[in-house]
Image (cartoon, rainbow, N blue to C red; front, side, top):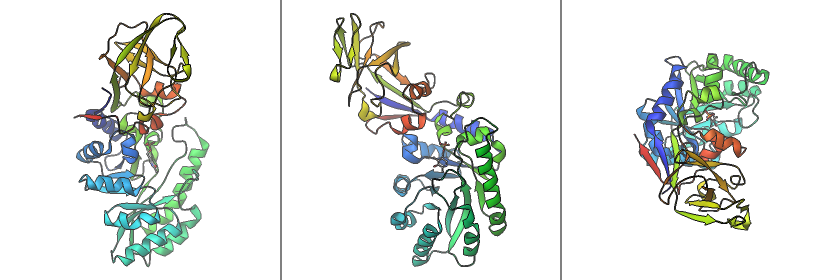
Length: 361
Ligand SMILES: *Cc1c(COP(=O)(O)O)cnc(C)c1O
C-alpha cells in the first residue's frame, strides 16, 4: 500500500521553531494553499488553528470554501481572488487581498451592494516581484479611498522575490526599502493596519523585517530553502509504499515502457504501486531518484508509468509486501527535488489525492 503519513507533531515543532525567531506579538499567517502544499488541507488547517495561528491563507476562493465546508471558522486570507468569485468570497466570510485600483473598486461595489459595513480586506503591493499587486505609485490613490469606503484594511503587504539568497542581497534590500516607503504614509492613515513582508525563508534570513506578521508556508511543512534552516525543521509528510512484485532479470532484459532501461547484468527489479499520476513524475528514472528499502537505496529504473514504477533491487534482500520509503523526516525530500531539478514546493504540491493520507497526531 502507498501512503502519505502526516506527522502533526512535526507541524507543531516547525511552528515553534518559527515562533522562536519572532517577537511574541508577531502574528503568524499559516499558508495552506494548494491542499496545504500537497499534504491534505483539512487536518493541517485544524492543527494550525489548535496551535493558535492567527490567520490561515489560501491562494484561491475555492480553497477557502473548502476550509469553511470542513467547519474551519478562523479568519482566512485569499491571496489571489478574482472578481468573478467575489460574491462567493463574501458569502463564505473570506478576506481578499486586493491588488489594483480596479480590483479594489469592483470588490468595494459588491460590498456596498450587500450593505456590509467595514468588510476586512488586505492590500498587496508589488515591490519588484512583478507578479501581482498595487504599484508603489498607487499609495495616494489608496489614501483617497479612506474617506468613502466600506472596506476595512486589516493588513498591507508585499512579497520578496529571493528571500533565501545569502545576505547581503541588494535586490531584496531594495524591495524592503520600497515597502518601507509605501508603509510610512499608509501606517499614518490606517493606524490599525498591520504590515508584513516575509515568507518562510524571509523569517530565517531577515527576522529584523518581521514587522507585524509573517506568512509562512513551506516552513510549516519542514522545509526552508537552505540547508542551515532545513535542518532545524522536520518534514511533516513521509511517503511510503510496499513492493507488490519482484521479477528476476537476465542480463540484457528491458524494463518498462519503451524499453527505457536494460539490465546490465542478471538481477532483480521490484514494482511499486505509485506513478506519475500520483506525483512521481517522468523526470525520475534514468538514474534520477531512488527509494529506501531495508536501509539501502534502490534506484528508479526506466520510465515511470502512470500507476507504477520499477526499482533495481538486485543488491537488496527483499520480498513483495516489504516497506519502501520515498522520503520522511530522516530521508530528505530535498535530495529528491535536487536530482529532478525541482524544489520541495513542486514535489509536495504534486502529490495527488489518490495517495491516501494517514494522520498521526
Ligand atoms: C505562497 C505564499 C507565501 C508562503 O511562502 P513560503 O515560501 O511557502 O513560506 C507567502 N506569501 C505569499 C503571497 C504567497 O503566495
